Image (spheres, helix red, strand yellow):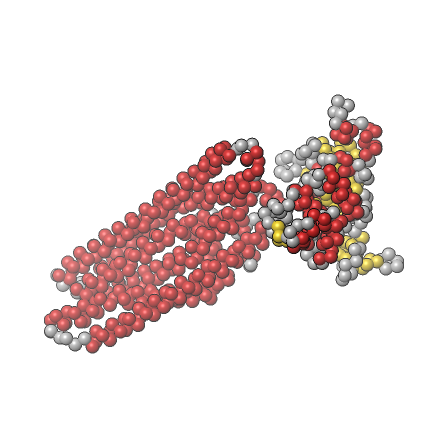
Length: 632
């Protein structure tokens, strides 16, 4: 997608309906300019056919019916020829109408396809902070409810509005040519209808915006309740959940009611104004015709009342579409709000590459995987490139961090992890353990200080390369819809079946996988709902193992595994961690006893550090946590 269509304009995003709809149209034209031009041509043909049909009564009355009544002629040959020509014109109009409606179906569905693709690409480029601060159900509502409002706009409203405008212009020109005096009546009533439309649209517009926001809130609430259904039932919270949902749903009903209250009044009001215009033209035309004024004939009056309906009906039709337009503008507001979010920035230029080492210890880049990794560091000023072996040395130098600028949660964090060391973080919940690992892979950027990876400031390393060098097993596992094999292969998309099986064996997951109905081909759905929590965790460990990363982050990786399984996994984990710098977060202190260094955290600070024996001998916070002897 062209970035020009996605970028924010100076002064913020468009916040009114006209600009939002204009942006939707420009988005559509980016992909479907020529089909849309063909649609306009077809609409023009349809409008001309409509005007020809509306003016035919004058020819019928003045050229045929009146002369026949006066002369008693029964020659219908001329009338038959005109009727045949009219039938041809109207047939062409029908074909053109069918064509533009069919083309717009393709255009609208294709635009929806591209829009969802672009939305997903933009979402995938956003920083973790965005997802931490926005309800997932509300984001999903953008893809479903808000995008769907644009479907009606593109497939029906825009063609109908263009058709109405072209028909009005063509009819107006015909009316002026036919009789300027009667045209004035139609123009005045049309002006009243447009004024009414503008005011009612303004009233309903603000409630359509609120409706889409309330709809997103309902979706978010439902998603939250689905995810937490076990908790709801365990604590018998069903009735309270029903009451909470009723409140959210009532807000949606209220905003929708107010939006449609004004919108639904618009069409009948305009329709009645149109009938008043019709009656005025008929009365004034009859008076002029009876008195032989302004060159008005009976055919002129008959034709003009028809043209008057052709002139005012489009305004009524547009007012009917205004509901969809305003609703679509509200949806577009939320769609482009997501589209305009600033992507995660990456100013890094150091890459992680496969390397090979000659007998003199010099590193060069390798085309094939060698299991020897190096940082490819271009020096732009000198025009040279150096290679630094990826060993896993991590240094935090006086690091401060806060999720919000006004609240720092990590204070003066300094640590040094030598290559191949196992570094453990322990402490109470909320002490900042997981936050530190989020800084290593740059899910968040630090407020102050420096983090160096193999002597390189991590801000200089490209984020994908930095994250590729870190295998991560999170506390909350997530399995995707697909087979067990595909979920393991997620850690390395080009991994062979043998590599996936080897990784599963390393994580001691192979045994339970082979007992599944279809083994490695067993389909997982609903985030692995057909597996136990421990089995899901084992698959997450296998996924990290198949990636064979140079460094590891294990965030409570064995928290959901029973004691017996934990012993089986620990051997595999030790094999996986061998030779790799590993950061371990664990509440079970027995799993970190063999760590090279244990960091004890409290309120965002490292208050103790050392080996298990050193910390036990010091009888400080770690001793209290390990023994449960808080009186000490």
